[in-house]
Length: 103
Image (cartoon, rainbow, N blue to C red; front, side, top):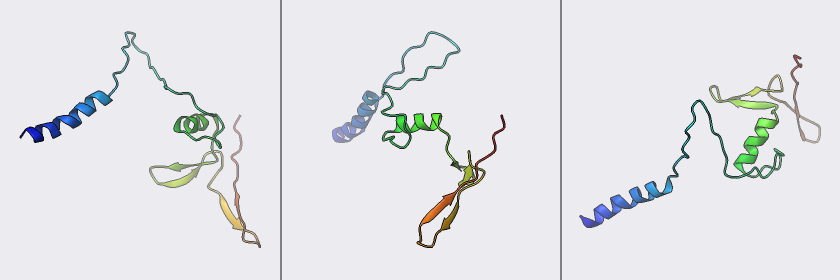
C-alpha cells in the first residue's frame, strides 16, 4: 500500500513543481505577451528554433500555405499551388503565378 501511494504521489509532485505561476496582472483589459528568449534570427531560411520560424512567418508572407480544414495547399501570394514541370535532363521546375496587387 505504501509503494502504491508513493507511485501516485510522485507524478503529482513532479506536475506541481514543473508548472510555473503566471505573473499577477492588476490592470484590466490588457493582453500580456512575452517570450523568455529572443529569436536567434529573422531570416526565415536560417531559422533553427521555433521562435525564429514564427517571427519569420509574421514578417514574410509565403507563396502557399496549407488549409487545415481541407488539408490542401492553397495560394497566399501565389494564385494557386506550383505547376511542376520537368526539363529534358529530368530537373524539376516549380512555376508560380503571383496574385495581382490591389493597392
